[in-house]
Length: 629
Image (cartoon, rainbow, N blue to C red; front, side, top):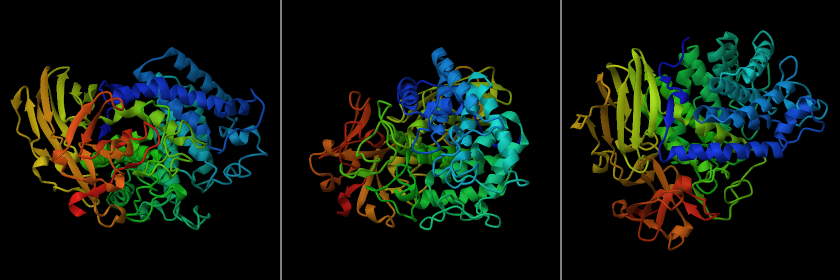
């Protein structure tokens, strides 16, 4: 089967045991996932499956017709967690929910509780008949999340119970929508990704053909009316055929899910035109439409991308789901093209715009992730702080499935090349052409840049080990310098000093396209030690972003910093950033679950991801730059 030229090392092959991510993954397992299951029970989401199966009477409960997906997403997250930490109680609980889903599925494979419960009284978005309002019904969107959950559950447990439900659904949809039958596309993308993943497991070519059909049929007005609003014609990315799209427009989550599907089909088909199309769109997103946090989608209205350089701080949207989708997209672009710039963007989103979406407790969330708060503007759906739940709960449930899958982003392979994408302590058993390579990482990243790799092959084996040198260590921000750049320049002394040793001896570094490449015959007990200097640096913004003129942001390593009013001696608008070299860098284990703070004359800066864990409080990422004042 053709697929990505670079293969990700599956999440089940790598075990993370670091001080930064592992506690968060455990918080997700112990607190977030149980909390979401409880809320799905209490809010009627799981009862909707009971009602659709006839086990309980009553109307569909929910504000939207796509609330089935919250159950699917948390099942996916729970499945990943079972692989890392088997829990028989959770395993049995999942079996029970899957039985409900099976009973709720109609005989022909259709699965959409909002219509099945009472076909005469469906949500206004659902349309009077099946598939009659795909612009807003989310019928196919629901299926996409079902397929993702089914594949995760099968891979984690070996059970086919949910997989069989997904196959029955996918067979039905393929028969309905392949070009010989119904010519239409989902209003909210993700089924394309789900079908591609289902294809990898089942080898059923119809699944791949249908995913490709849904992509290539977009924007074609010959036989149907295109989706969109007068004020946002590209809302569903249905304004042009996908191969003609060069800019990111419309609803940001829909967009990045579609770009992921395009990458999957480009790899599996393979289709170079689809791959080139998303490369061009990526340039638009990263060079003109991304926040320094990596967040995307600047407008509250339609949760959409704005125009080029439209990046307001206080009123920025930057949805958590969009950050998760963008991580998945950038990972796919790396697997397709092998360039480190995609991983650089992935890392910046991961540590900032994605991680900010969940509280340290694991049970309060940001749907919206602005880069500034005045403590008054209720940016987070009627709140200026984190919330335990939302009327539309896509972000909390999306986070629940992302964290336990993180280990699948750390390593990748291509024949005799092993790629180290992220620096996270733990162990991995990596299959290569001639055997297996066991790697153990030890590091306190992102708090410092020292990383040790212990190599233990099954037997002596020659492999090219490619270690990514992060963009921040090479002098670039967010994959380049067009939108954000270090004030002291990309080639300043702060960017030098990278060191590598092999078995205690200095090793000459040769950085090739962002990789340190070490090719040798590896023997048990080999040890590599990498040191990435991690100074505090000021970041400036392209002058086209009007709000950030005369301002700067602070970064240290991959982390963007912010200042909350409670940590400042004067109003935030009066603070100016001095020389970052004079700031005190201090690890404080009793502050916000352990963070590195940056102490200036009048303020203490904390990592952006950690803000609003002490209640609603004014906050700024971009502060006045003393030298430009």
